[in-house]
Image 1 (tube, rainbow, N blue to C red):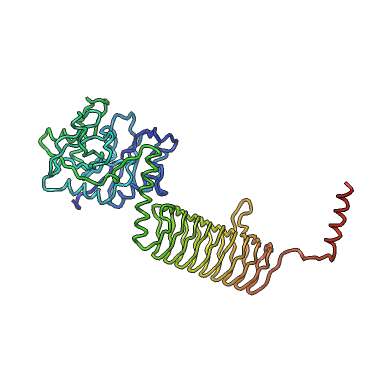
Image 2 (cartoon, rainbow, N blue to C red; image 1 turned 30 degrees about the vertical axis):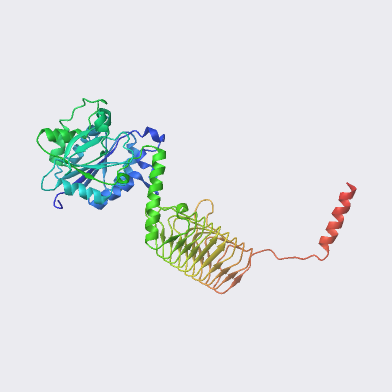
Length: 451
């Protein structure tokens, strides 16, 4: 099997009308990644030589994602059934001589391991014409049914619309996923007709066509949740919830403490080190890496950021893309960090915005401090040296450098560089007028009485 090349045909030509969306159905996301992206990542892990995605409308939406995975897109128009859809990939696979996997863009959680099983079954000693993936869902719905012998040999495959009552009582359901050798696939597809209730060319018919030639096909079973399709926003939400439950369990098994697991939201690529504690209502967007022994406090939102070991984030913190938080650093409540690095032990404790900045080791940023990084046209950078102290309610107008060990007085607006170990004050001088407040009150009270 390992000597044979493999290609994947991904069917994604469905109209997705139940989604009621201008976005192509297979681009709706689960765990921060389009459902088609989940599937293509597994195809990549399998080592597919070619990947062809068959679409109907929306090619311009789907093509960039497919191109990112080295695949190509073909269009099925008109849409005359699944067998007809697979045929649209034939020209793109001209000259390919290997195993072809037929997958579905709205069935995102098929694993590379299952794809390998499909190929292994196809390469078994009995040389089946087709290897078909099936499951036994709790609710068989309107899936096509598979009648099979105890050894997995397929006796009959039938679409729900064409099945008898006794056939509909069978709980072994066709997922639609198949593995077929290229030389078998094209000749079998060429013999598929449309004499059925829907008047369509059904892909499963190739199994019965092969059987008429005296060739057996075989079924492999997988867990129902791996091959469950998504056709509506409600189903999308259920699949998201199921994915999140599995991911939370995996995180806790790996040594992460989730205080209230059901309120923590992961993305497909979230990485968290052991002995990290995640408090309730935390959202991890794509591109997050969290080290060991970190504490992520409640209601924090983290995306495209890295947090080193021993750091503390939140509560109510927001880390945006490009945020890099060093070891034992602190990002406190209502602090936002974007495209900025915080050195080891640096602290931004309260109500601050740090954007396009570099904060040195051990620096302390006072409450209400902002780096003024945008002039209306361009972004500019702020550098705060190691051990510097920025007083509360300061505005650092970039581009500006605060030297190591420097101190900025509270309430300052800093527009020029501050030297190492210097103190910078940039605010109006405080003036005190003795007795003026009392005289003011007396005057105003008298005026009020006379009104």
